[in-house]
Length: 291
Image (cartoon, rainbow, N blue to C red; front, top):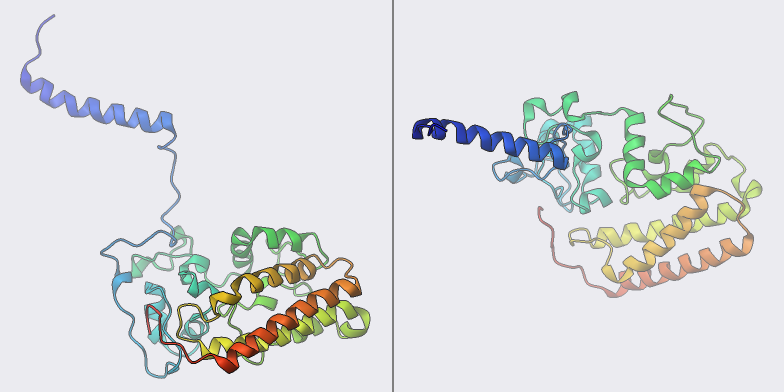
C-alpha cells in the first residue's frame, strides 16, 4: 500500500474528526433538532442583562426595582404609562422573587432588543390562551385539579368569559402581591351573587383567605425591601394552608362545614402570629439585589 504524503494526512484528519463527532452526536441523540433559544436560558456574560437598572422618575420610593435586569424590564421601566405599570406591579411579586422576568411568561429574545418580540423566540405577548398554557406548564398539579372541577374551560379552543382564568383569581403581574383592595370574595361574587347562601362553607373559606391576605399585605409592606417580604419562619405554614385552600377551591367538590371550620381556624391562627410579628418586629434592613 502506497504511503500517503504528510500533507494529505493533514488535510484528511480534520475531516475524519468532524465526521466521527457528527456520527457520535447522531447516535447519542445529542444531534436532535433544538428549539429556538428561549428567554429562560441564562444570559451570557456579555448580555445587556448585566447592566444595572436605573430607577425612573415617579417610581415608588419604598418599592425595590425588579430582581432580574432583563432587556424587557429596562425598556418598559422608562416607556411610561401602560407600558410601565406592569413592571411596577411585577416588582416583589412571587415570580420576581423567584428570579423570573417578563420573557418567562411572554416569551421573546432576552439577548437582542431588536428581536425581543419575534415569534421565532416564542413571543406570545398578551395572548390569553398562550398564558393559560404557560401557567399550567409550571403549575401542573393545580391545573389538573382545576380541570376536574366545574370552573374548567379549555381556553386553547376559544376564550369563554363565562369561565374564570388563572389571572382572574391570582392576578397576572402582581401574583402573590395583590393591591390592598383585592378581595377574592369580589371575584367569586361576579358569578355567584348568592355565594354565602348557596355555598356557605366555600364563602367562609374565601372570607378567611381574604382576611389573611389583608394581614400578609401589611407584612409585605413592612418588610418590602427584605430578600423575602414574608419572613421565613412562616413560609412552611403558609405553604401548607395555601395547598389545603387550593385543593378545595380548584377542585370545588363537596366541602363539609367541619372541614371548612378546621381550615379557617388554622388560617386565623396564622393570621394571629403574623399580627404579633407586625407589632413586635422592627423594620428590617434592605437585602434586595436592586433597589
